[in-house]
Image 1 (cartoon, rainbow, N blue to C red):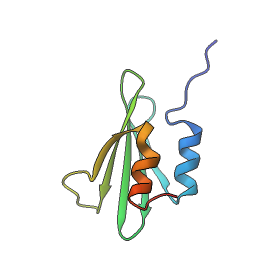
Image 2 (cartoon, one colour):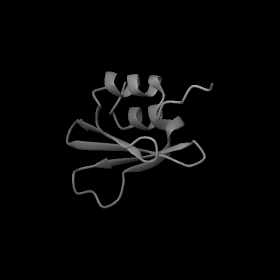
Image 3 (cartoon, one colour):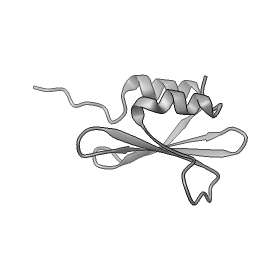
Image 4 (cartoon, helix red, strand yellow):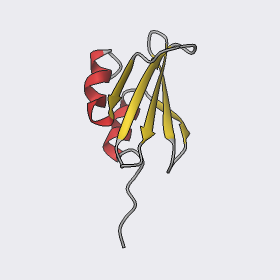
Length: 88
């Protein structure tokens, strides 16, 4: 019997929570996760699960953002958040 893979790997969850991100919404298995952080304003990170098993992320700044600050793959999450001062 194959073990079901987590929506977001544990090491990513740990990285986000250790850097002050709070998970506020989880629509597993066919949807997305939403994380919030307050750092020099309101930030929202949305992680989408694709049908092929990959993930992509949208990073928003402000609660009324029209366009995301960044769109990237889950593989790049550490570099993108560190570049913006949202993680160490």
